[in-house]
Length: 244
Image (cartoon, rainbow, N blue to C red; front, side, top):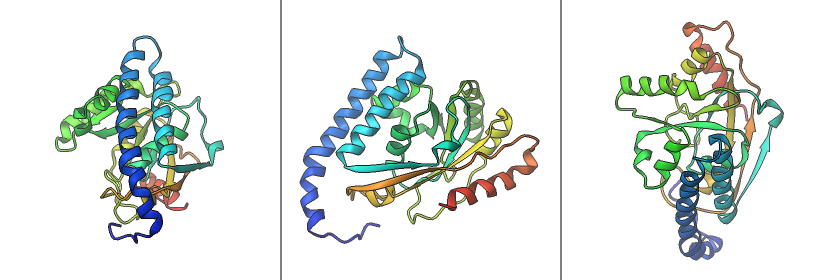
């Protein structure tokens, strides 16, 4: 979506995007990242994540501005742990999930993000999971070591497509989320994000004001399932995400 029409509203928005929002995004990322490092020795990681991650996400969504609506909240029990599986359309998906999901979770993210100044250190301190996709053995070992963090209401979140969708259509799913759900005996919680691609497409910097919706679908139990059932679990999860 690099050739979206540029009307009068687009031109009027450009000074705000470059002169106000971009500096505030950079400054807020540094501020909340340092706040994470400051608070972690004194507060539980889940609380720090919700305070700092949620504050960072809501602030930047407000300044974009992007309105967010959540539906299906009754399907999420904050006392339970899940393997959360969500589609991925935009960097703004991170703001939606961090700002409006309201539970503690660990991201499974690209190892390259660990090298981002302040942000990478903050994410590492919060216990997020950095996976090197170029090294399958190391990636599997990383996921294995992360399992002990997923308990007592803390969930783990996967973008099973592995990257942002350029077209908005669901891509092929990778199996990592479903293997972890079976290993931990945790239900799979499908989620659908709509609208973020119109705010910021997968490629490019054509940021625009807009709105997004986060839909939480009923959890998919894995009791009694084996590795042979992974294709079925993947299909059920994909169908749920595509249904919204």
